[in-house]
Structure formats: C-alpha cells, structure tokens
Image (cartoon, rainbow, N blue to C red; front, side, top):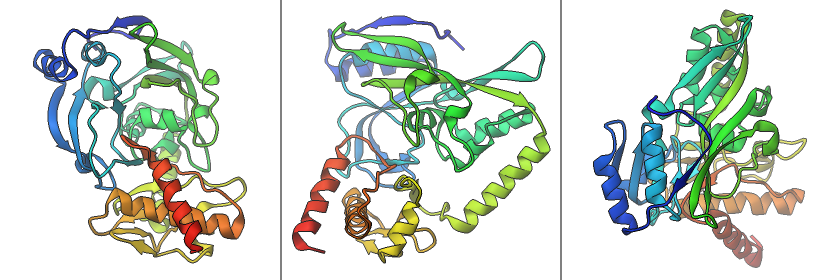
Length: 345
C-alpha cells in the first residue's frame, strides 16, 4: 500500500470551488482511482433505484484518499459500498458519493507468535464474501457469518452487521476513521477501539461526519472444512427462505426485541403487497423488492404502510435497516405514515 495508517491531520484546500477541486483531484489521482460526473446511482444499488450522482468518486489508495479529503474540505459527502442496504433518492445526489476500491478493498493477516490466532487488517472497501473466502483459504475461522452480509466491510462496521449466530462486535478489535472537524477546518484520521463505538444490535455509534477506513479483526485457526460446510448450509438456508436473487436491500427492518419483523408484517396481511414497482416479497415479508422499475417514493410508501399497520396492530415501531443516502428518507417516511393515520388506513 502506498501509505500506512497512522494518526494524522489533513488540512482543507478551499482555494477553488468544489467542482474545480474534484476535477483537479481526478486529473492528479493514481490509476486506481477515478472521478466521473453524472453517474447513474441505480447502477450502484442492489435495489436498482436512484437518480444521478453529480460526483461519483472511486478511491483506490490511501494517498488518493488523503488528497480527496483535502479536496472535499467541509463539503458533505456520502461513502457507499456496494449499495446493498442503500436507498438513493429519485432526484439524485449533488454531493460527492465515494466508494473505496482496489487497495482500499483489500486485507492483510498478521499471525500472532504462537500461530494459533491472528489480526486481520481489513480495508473498508473489502467485499464481505471475498474477505471470508480469503480468510478461510488461509486457515482462519470466526468471520464466516459475514458471508451472508451483502456489501462491504465498512458497511458491516457502520451497522454492526451480523446474523442470529454472531455480530461483528464479537470479533472486531478496532477501526480507523476519517472524521471531518469543522471547527479545526481539517479532517483527522484516528484509531478507535471497538468498545468505544457502543456497538449493539444493528447499530454502531460513529462520530458525525465520519468515514470508516479500515478495521482489525481477531481470528483463530480452526476446522476450515467444517467452517466451509457451515457457510454452504447457511447459503442454502438463505436461498430457501429469502429472495436474495431479486433486487432488494436484504432485511428492510431490524427485528424488534423478542420478535421478527417479517412475522409482524405477514401478520398484518402485507406479504406480497405492492405499491408502484415496489413489493413485499411473498417468500419473506421483511424483504421489500424492486419488481418493476420501482422508485424511491414507491419503496418509502411501502415501508410507511408496513410501519403504520404494525404499529396499529402490535404497538411496535419497526426500525429501518435501510440506509437512506443523500436525502432524509426517515422524514419522508414519517410524512407518509401521518397521511395513512389521517386516512385511518
């Protein structure tokens, strides 16, 4: 890697307009990175929904990332992974949208002295499924649950991703973050322990304006063949019970304590329900899919309907697992819920 992770401060370079700074960054960046304008966000979302990104940026090295942060200055930006749990707005996004690739999607392993355990240093852009296969190939077990988490490692950190067997916090040791400091007019890069992030079910407490750069996992040697068999069984179970081959964000809502969002949505009679091009899967009611050129508004209306019905029947507020990028999807969803309440639907 062209540079190493260490604590640092990155001064802003605000002498030019944001467009000019990004264009210069695009000209001066390495071949691992790229900058384009007017990129369709639907290409970068598992839902295949979204308007145009005014600025689409792929960053492949740490040197390029530090230069990009300097160019961004105090501008808002949106780091994204594979868009596997992301809803983009129909009208597109004016602010820069950033994806980490190449070196920033890699991982290295540092074995401990006895050879029985290791620390895996994982860059935020690493695809979870590729990470698990690579670790198993090197003989390290403990991260297999991540193969069921579509998307990248940075997203897994931000959501404390997991399955019913394990969450990321069980193996995460620390993370490196880039944090925008508006008062100091700098970005700062610093290491945080996993314990300091108050990780809980589908939630990680990250600082405002923070970007995950990498994380370190504690893993051990073990029965790799048994781990691979568990992975295969988990995949088969997923494919039997969840519509992973369709355009969705995975689980739309987090499970309430002691219950399942899918069960509640099915109980209120919404399994298979559609609004516009968006539909609730007939296979699993917590999977909302794009079945026919759905818009973000279609998706939000369906989410609002599910939340409204479940609240009316069970007095439970379903919490979205969907990440709304580039707009306040929660606020719009609440507006739609109030409309349903007024109509007594």
